[in-house]
Length: 360
Image (cartoon, rainbow, N blue to C red):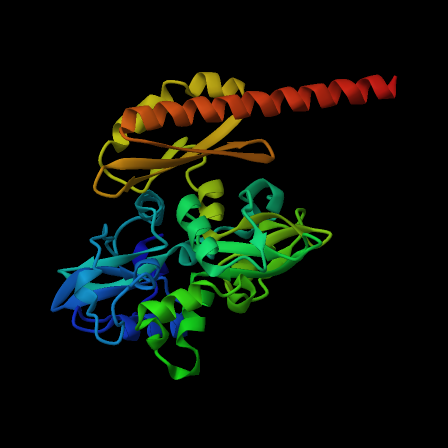
């Protein structure tokens, strides 16, 4: 299957002279996290996560200051190879470009909708879900934004005093709040107004997300992801995990061809893969089936942030770290995830021993 057969052909674009307010309004209406910028040819993307941080008047600020260069795909590319590029980019969607003209968009959702149903039916939500980071429904918006920034996430489920799910807050719900009553985000025009908004409780920005149990099949999860960007996995109405389209792709894509997936940066990618593949034999003995690593460069001081996921049989283990050089970051990620893998293995072994003793 080729990219041209899967991509979304009905695309929306803006120019670099369009305003931040116009872009955010379009993103909310069409539920896009990014929009291509075109000036006779494809220039790059603007992202919702960057636009909602705009400190100047969004009705006057131009998009030219927010354009980010992205990898591009071709219509003739094999969908498996394109998915590898998509995962590696760390983005939700990539443009399909022919002769400098954008002809389509390939998103994570486009890809997961083409995964064979048989594969989806054989996997449970508990095997795919990521660790969920929750916050109180009464937490201030500024705190929620810090949680998102620190953990590199875009959705935070909210809980009430009983620690039960009461809603969810994500970039769309924040942007939608800022745009309500046709104010076109003018509520951010002054510093004082911005501070007032940031002091609002999170529940003012929330919505009720799609939910599912841990034994729900991935086929049902994919259906839910067509109507929302996250599915919160609950047990007795308490959040236990969260699944996004990226989690599905990481779990099912290149399971045998690519044991180590790197996303977020191009520089140093091969060295990172080589570093982790040197330990592949050891990790196989620890029941690790696949490793996914996300690396980002933070700020002008070139500090690196990294998150690593290790997929074992029926469990996903996660660790993260920050460092001022890539080698140190990679080493710390490996050490942290190995400790976690060994710790969980020992817990499972002790549990089996206890069950055996109890049975005797």
